[in-house]
View 1: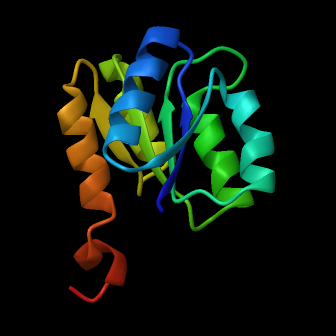
View 2: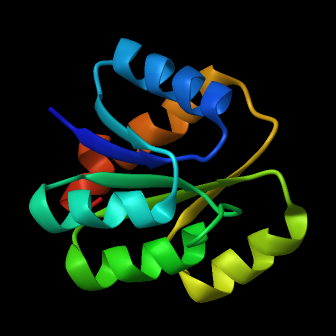
Length: 125
């Protein structure tokens, strides 16, 4: 089963995202800030880090950079409502996917599905 680490400081959004991803048969570990995600990255395997960019203590870009050091095989997807930080995220973590708020939950699930389609995993197609 594909495992997702979700870092989102807004509780309602975190719950909606977790529910939508679990309904789509993903296993989700959700935390409320970047600093809370680090111990999970250090002790568990995740296929995807799904993180808000703007969070207290450690923003999503810093978290993604830490994730790259701790677990280089974990893919990264940013979610943000701020267009200004989208550019910075793209420059800081060029391989990351960026999803801008507001988005429909089904769009999020589709984007995650796309990341893990057999074609995109094999690297051959």
